[in-house]
Image 1 (spheres, one colour):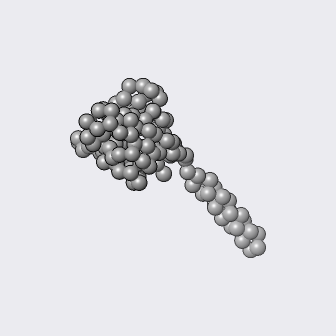
Image 2 (cartoon, rainbow, N blue to C red):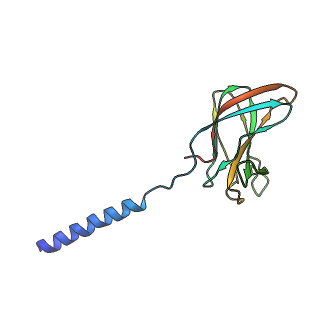
Image 3 (tube, rainbow, N blue to C red):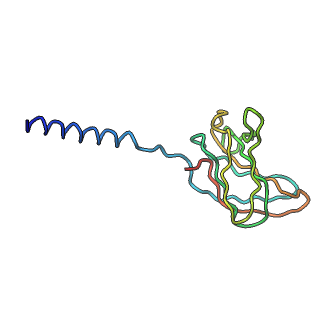
Length: 141
């Protein structure tokens, strides 16, 4: 009887260890990097960063003026930009961003097969020249 209890205890301990290994989370590219948009009558873009999964992009505005943010996909850090902020049914996911606020941007970069994500900043008033700075990441936690 004691041997049976020991074997059951060992089996349970092994099951706990095995299940803990299965719970290891995969990392994504959610580390913040600085951006600086310069609006001179047109939109500006972050450089491309590797996008690891289908999570939202993250952006926080620290200074400057407000702008509209949208997600774009690329095949390299500085490659051609492809809009990735509309769903297949045409819903557009953009955010008007204000200083001191942070936002999560729905996007289809990863789902559309692009390896890099970028954020477009578009000035609220294209006739004004101003800057906006903050941090962003192509993936979120």
